[in-house]
Image (cartoon, rainbow, N blue to C red; front, side, top):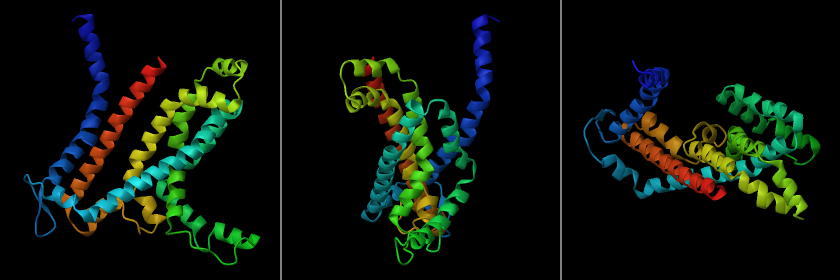
Length: 286
């Protein structure tokens, strides 16, 4: 056996577990969901396999358009808030924290070792009418009576920020940590103010990290389920809520699968656009 062929077999052997896992846990479930999306709903809430576009025609009726709009709005607002909060944190850790950078990153990630539902339940305690925040505000005299926080849109945004902040900070930190400090020194020598140096040097070089952060927040935020239900009271139906209700409450498996496929398609389009924009940014930098 020749050396190149032996090397190819070794590479295939090393990749086999990952490929098998991807096929069994990713590709096959996606194909099953796609097959269900073209099925028909039977009388007893099951699905009769075939090929029909009934679920997709029903999905794009006017009644479901506000749900798509709410999902996109929540994902967009959450992404903007995460960037506004996460970028300064990543900037400080990468360029100002020095030897404490590793410690600050660890402190950022430690809470996420706890189960997601437990962390969201903790926010319910904090934001409850008799919770910690209301008690503190009443004790300080800021408010006279506890105010309702759970079941509001700001509470959902707080939960989204808490959930997606690390996925915002880490890619931006990775981009900023590789920044050549000599470029900042050159900008300073040429008379640039700190703000000019940031906008003309630091921010453009951190764009790949910013774009990755947008991708890591926007795509999962479109289909998030637990946060709007626990902190928002499920009042605003988004795609994640809709999928669960269609599968479990209304027993409309084909329509629920169709919503899942559309959400997957939207996410795929966003990822493709991200890759193209990233390639353009890299070419411009080169």
